Image 1 (tube, rainbow, N blue to C red):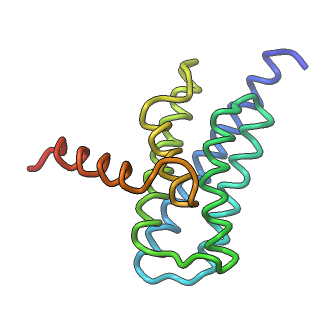
Image 2: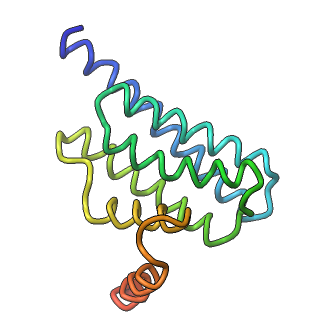
Length: 150
């Protein structure tokens, strides 16, 4: 397939994935307000589609990043882990990060940045891998210290 043909399909993938991110975000917000467990399945399916499409269309960094979120969602979906405010907040930040990755993909820029790498570490830590929880708390404290207040 020509690069022009692949680019056309990549654009469709990006548009559909952005819709999937909207679905993930609205479902996460509904869960935070006490929505039912079926929303977790909806969120998981959207993440799974993004992960698979990213791998297919040449975005391995995005696929790997989304895999971390999908793994966390799978634990929630299977009942190994309860959904709580901290997980919802982490997944909402994941949605925002993925939007940034898609914007960089459209601009022809590298997909990973410091935010994506930090969030990947947080997702891994939430699964019991990677960065120790104390490092995550130190990062959150630093983020809060740098936050603007209006």
